[in-house]
Length: 215
Length: 215
DNA sequence: ACCTGAACACCGTTCAAGT
DNA sequence: ACCTGAACACCGTTCAAGT
Image (cartoon, rainbow over all chains, first blue to last red; front, side):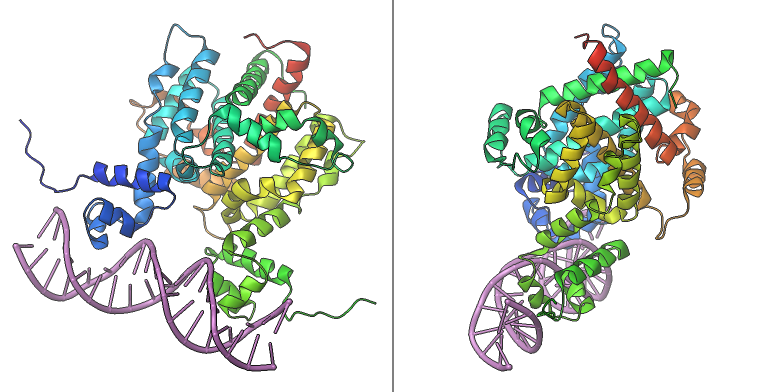
């Protein structure tokens, strides 16, 4: 049997509260302390500073996307990447305010190493793997920034597209091409656009194996 | 002849100082005020709040990349996109600490509208245009986060790759594929990787015109 | 309109002192 | 080891008052 808790507060409880506060709009050491029933200074027993909390949180969030989706032998390589990417996108977009921290901090974390190793199992060329990571994380970052403009919780995707479409007024004289593509632009931040772009990226990466790059 | 200045400080001077402070590591209203020779409260004559300064700065930075590169008739469409993307990357990576703000703020700004319009001139499918934007901005965001770890000014690219390579120790038992690709991974944040991925993305987007997506 | 001086309501972090 | 209470050195923003 394990020993009972020696702390009145577990580090995981601190991270739970930290994620709540990020979702609510602002993470402060003082608010975090009161939420877990401590004084601000006591937090420094668990983490050396604020940035360590954010880094740990980012890593934990990254771990929530099911990595085994990348190993599923019943799926094609491209399908496995799509399944995992969609899972990661869903996990991260559930906490849009945490996304900027993930780009900066989490991809040096321990979980990121596992993600990279699994991705290399599907896409053995490291340059291709990184290109996929850039596309997926870039999409999520841009979508998260947009999502923060909506309330919390955000309205469903079709409503968000309609809302952007309604607000989006541009001068057809000055921006004719943008004007002509308004509907597509309003749907930039959508699961459909995410999947479409991912398919094109993966197609380009496959093509590199059978035909050399032409410059 | 134009009228003389009616203000002792121009808004552009505020943005100049703001960029300096971001590059130095922290932008505060108080430090910004003293740098332009004002009291903190006086800044609110020029901008409604701190976020407005950041947004204006992001838009100004975006304007520094030469948009005419996208219209150069002597270049192929893909070459035009590459030239502009490399120019944008250079402008933004010169100020890595400002990059997170750009992802969040600048792509609603006035300059971003011009960028989008010009990109649509080269790549008429809005979905393809957005996919390129995601790749380019995603790359820049990940590179900027990495670049901040190095000093200021950062060492040249070959030295950065060598430094990452030297520090990067991983267990070959636990992460065999990552271990085997160490050299490529250390070169993730490089002009070469950026161009390689961009070529693959553009190839995938071209392919979509002659062959339908297979699911 | 532009600016100062002073205040208000916050921050992250440190640290002696207690248990 | 864990935690409190109090302090230190900061923040962004507001606002009456001056020019």
